[in-house]
Image (cartoon, rainbow, N blue to C red):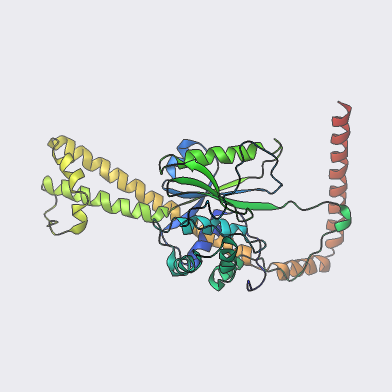
Length: 365
């Protein structure tokens, strides 16, 4: 059994980042890509995988689309799980990257044990193993809205709500894969390296987008990247070690760094700088101080962003119904509710008339 219903979650980097932290993954976060330009991609490297959200539809015939691999064709070390739980595609896509980048990342005990246990199982059974993880299910469902009402939509209208789906792109053992839990198996797009896999994945994302009408713009591309705050902190430590070495060379620092293990990591870079003249060394000190200040600014910006993510996630979980009831009661007591209702009805009527007028004008062209 899968332990109950799973909720739908938003394609938001703050949601995904908190989700993986709850599962026990360390040292990574999720960023949203606004464009697919090289400049933007370079700013967030290293990138461990991409998650793509799109409106689900039956894929039309396309020469660009490749057939899923059969179990016999699939790399036995590749982790691919069929999505057997409704509304869980976001977590399945995220886990598809984490499980296949375990060598590079600290995925935590829960995912490490799950991978060791399920890797020898068929892909469908791996999907059930994910669904049976109480830690993963609880983390996923922690983003469910606290709504006491069960809303039934009017089925007589004939309008169907659009369904959206998450898939992931990840390099593994020199091959680029598209991992989609609704497919029978992984889709391989050929050989790649750590240097060129993003370029090839970007081309596949663009091909998929091209299959839709130009009016369809509801796409989201997320990237699993290294924790920016931790990267900045490590960079500050490295820069400070180099600065201390240069200061010591100029007689500005009398501390003994010979026993520092960290100092040995920057010895080669420091020797290169010390080979320059005294004026060049002094200029390097100024550049190092500026670089340290820039990294400290990045940490401050990241702290602000994470605080904003935390506040937004708390609002997602909050039940606003009691507040709305209280607000309606107060408006009714002040005899304001009826007037506001009439204004809303008139505004809706006006909007519908404008929409009809636009359609009529378009038809007359």
